[in-house]
Image (cartoon, rainbow, N blue to C red; front, side):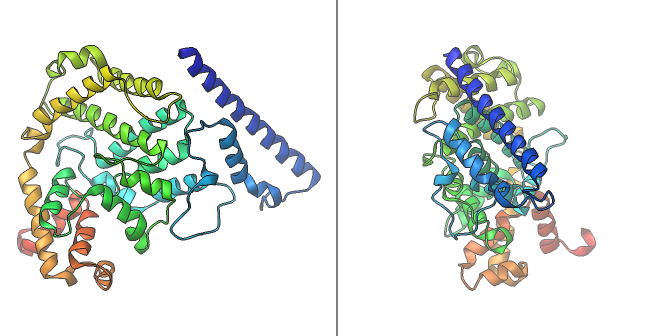
Length: 376
């Protein structure tokens, strides 16, 4: 098993090196002959994207999603000369305002005192790292994997799942963060969405619950999301004094490891070797059972009723109060959201506005709306 893994890795890097050397030789030769203009890099050199697409065909697994065979975008557009479609999607997400706002959105701890607790943004980055590691090892499309991972939580509310649950309870249309993430990339970002590929949109929508992504890369992100949050939430819970490492069930320690890094490594390594050469992404039974036991432990000790949730009631109150206020006073929302009322239900637009808020923005908006100016 290990020999096959390293053989695949060698094969991958060998082709990368050959590709790089051939491209470098082409540039030098062409410059010497005056066939390309360095400032413009015109002519054939602008087909770098096509070279990448051919490289994908030669080195990726038969189970990988090839960018040249994407099902396309909601609106057709001219392809980039340098980047594949999935690279382009990744870049659009990274440069979006929705992505930047994740840095001030709760992961688990609401308004923690300390600089080292996870936020929704650092969670997203950890998911991306884990997912890319798995995809690269399985020779899947790493660019597609990264784009899905970076976009999977764009629709998350302020105050984490607390905010999501409140909106789902009080909004007549319901609210799910994965559906909102898709709405962000399809419609809300920049007032018109990002026009991402089908495969990225599918992975974003189907990254949680019982939903099943249509690509292997989407399945990798779904697995990586769980690996990331279970482990980093343990780390944060220990930092917050809610649990100690010795509280973790012995069976989980024996199977997965007794440190943060060893548990992550055990899960990732197991996913890679269990999924290698198959059309599914999975863990072996012993690792899966220990992971589920660890997740259940977190629900019992951290996610429900612990000190990490001490501010949850206040956060719920803020979200609910803002929701009711904007339902009665829609013109108090920014102009871009008021303009959306021509084509969208009021409930949905209010949810769009609140879901896009950071924790800080929501609290400030609450104070501005309900607290007399003299007392703020």
